[in-house]
Each structure stands twice: as structure tokens, then as C-alpha cells.
Length: 191
Image: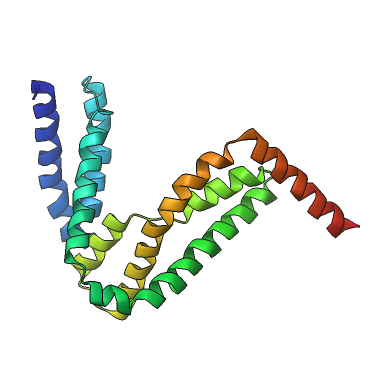
């Protein structure tokens, strides 16, 4: 480990130790405290010449580990009982959000492929952040907490096809076909 990496790690931990109790004191939760700490020290680390981009891999590993812990805590029986909520509530949230954002993008004149990509991205939220916040507030076992968790699980499942679809949306051939299809639909609706 380099001295720079150790200094950055120490700075991050110190910022977390300071920011998390302050955020918790105001009832905002530890996740928001960590976010504020990161936002506050990022310009300082950049100014000091630290390689902040290299730390993203370290942070991504932390998120993966937290999701792994969430998976370990899940009971297959409770997942089976939540299946209708996962696919109905979660599916509706992802579909309606994607459609609404797509409609707004089309209204602003963006191509359909771009609007769909933006809609798919904005239909997702952070399971790690929301789950930790629900747990801290003691809401994870409530009906609203279970519904929120169901939507989060569906979002996590939906990421897999989204990761396959988004590169396809960047293909010029698909964009041309979508534009021709939209022109045909618009022409039929107008005529």
C-alpha cells in the first residue's frame, strides 16, 4: 500500500467519523453522513493532488460487500412470499418511471433511443442507501418497508437486461430503425 492511499483512506475514515454522528444527530442517517463527508473532502483531496478516481474501485467494493450482506440476511421463504410485490410493484415502478421519463425526453425533442436510455437509468435507485436508511429508521419490517424493499429488488433484477439493452441503443442502425418507425407512427396518427 502506498503512503498516498493510506493518507486518503485515513482522511475518508476521519471525515466519516465526524460527519456520521452529526448527520445521525439531525436524524438524517449514516448514509447521508457518508455522502456529505465524501462531497466535502473530494475537492480537498483533488486539490492535494490525490488520485480520487482510483478510490472509486475501493468504494465500489464496499457497495458490493454491503449488497452481499443484504443477500445473506434474506430468507428464501420471505422472498417467495414477496414475489407478487416484487414483480407487480417493482415492475410498475420501473415501467412507469421509464415511460414517463421517455415521454419527457421525446417532448424535448431527444431521440427515442436517448430518451429510453435516460428513462432506464432514472428508473433505478440505490438499494444500498435505501435499505440502510430503512434499517436505521426501523421501517424495514413494516408494510411500507417491505413494499420499498420489493421495488428495490425488482430494480436490481431489471439492471441485468438494462445492461444488455443500453449498448444496443447506441447502435446507429437501431437509432435509424427507431426513427423510421416513429416517423411512420406519427404519419399514421396525423393522417
